[in-house]
Length: 443
Ligand SMILES: Cc1ncc(COP(=O)(O)O)c(CNCCCC(=O)O)c1O
Image 1 (tube, rainbow, N blue to C red):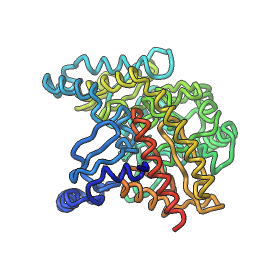
Image 2: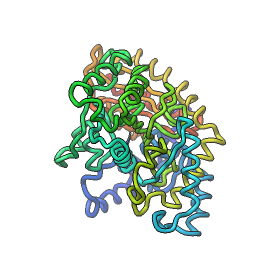
Image 3: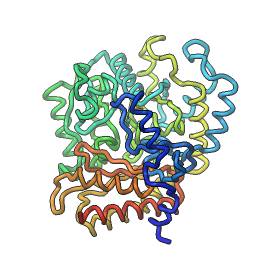
């Protein structure tokens, strides 16, 4: 039985099936149209790298809920800790009566995040909230206001993080005015700019110095691998050059590791790949196996520049989410999921490169660990092919594999499988993707 027919074997109905279609009709009458879904199948259970929908279809998950369930769905260590905590208490508000779980998560972040300097952490609920607060902390600590971000950046959907985010549609269009004192400079997109890391960094730094002034900048905010913008790995040397410049100019280097963090790229944090030590690091997604938790971790002198009461929120560091995080981190440690991510990289990249060679419609294959991507273009050009990208993703969905796309030009298929995904399911999902590319590329 070939891998693709093996995957088909798990499907009971067409995708979406009748139960999902009925739920889709109910949704239309009560859920805002602004909330879209990649695949209108309604999930009833999930385990490891498999999702089961309301029609009994079982799908392979190459999305991990957008890089969240790094430890796999319903990881026992996460479930057991959540079950224990939910029966004790669900909320007291850490700003009212604190609890140990919050402190334990901050102790873990202290040890796991890059750097041996004295650190502090503060917990939130979402990546955007963490990025917002990293900017607040940087401004409070430096007394400066300007924030520098990059082309193709994604940092969230709140007012400030929309200002930090590059792509207008769908994230920003019609939602202005946006927060002031945010400045965008070119980043590093090797496939499209052909620059070395130092060359790209020099262009960005020159733009900052000429148009803003280094002494006006509170923070530079950067994803070590840009996620929603297209899984763009900067050229070697780009991050270190920017980090050095920040240090030399008293600017806070904020690594937005919401999508790259927690073993996703083959290290605990992607900043480590080039031995960059961020002043502040924003984390979320993979931290808690699916429970909503986010954090800012960084230099104690920066975080403690904010007076008591200046940071917080009702739900930040919810005890159940903290329990889930401790379970998730336990799994990452015990199963060495950073190494698992590297295994996934070593399996996937060669197959995507061979597919690119064979079909001529993949302009670039890139990524690290289990954060991998293929950028689709018109054959013989670098012209983005968003339509082909969409058709390939849809073909994977119909074949029972959840695949996501991204990119400024909508032409990137990204692979974000759970780091614990078995070799067999990885092979099956890849075979479905290969088949989809081969068949759609010739239409
Ligand atoms: C680097 C980086 N920073 C910040 C965020 C924002 O994290 P929240 O938890 O979605 O607020 C993200 C969230 N990425 C997925 C967004 C999906 C969507 O909303 O369409 C990210 O990737």
